[in-house]
Length: 82
Image (cartoon, rainbow, N blue to C red; front, side, top):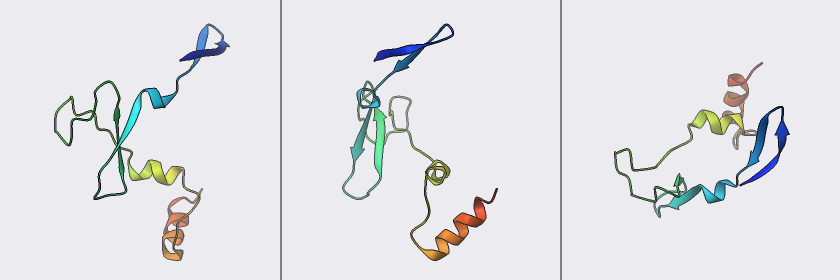
């Protein structure tokens, strides 16, 4: 963590997420399962200490440049009309 500068009286702090978030990989999927390094990987448990969090498909669509197939691209363009 380092201070990049100040904006008014607020410090702009840079934190590398590699120090905070780690990804676990399972052999049966391409999906990576991010979890906080401090909590550690506790498997797929349903408790507050599981640490697993996910990104919804909508967030992935927000950063996508387009879709791989023509039909998916058509639906993508229809969904994201201004």
